[in-house]
Image (cartoon, rainbow, N blue to C red):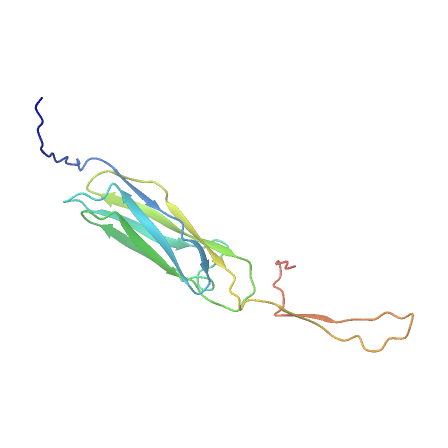
Length: 166
């Protein structure tokens, strides 16, 4: 029986398409960064470059009040397969429910034919601990038997129109 050892190198044809995808940033406390990971599969081969544009998109979270709007282009060169996009969320004192925004990918280009897999990643901004209502109840004072006691309940800050909070 004859055994031989050796090695082989498999070259990736630059005509093989890449897949470009973005992962959700998950849940982020307001004031912290939402970090999205963009992945190119397979890793970019020597002599090739992959570029992809990205932009933040309003959802229930709004640019300027909940996160900082941004857009740019990511460039992947030989052996690179992932890069991060960092979006700054804004810490405010507004009482609000968790809100969502997205990052969209577009215009993926390369020397080879590229397809975009998952084109959108989302992030959910959680309400910060300082975003709370203060509820107080004023003393009704002395009330004669048989009369109604009237208590004044105050909510601070005022509840936004269209938002129900229990």
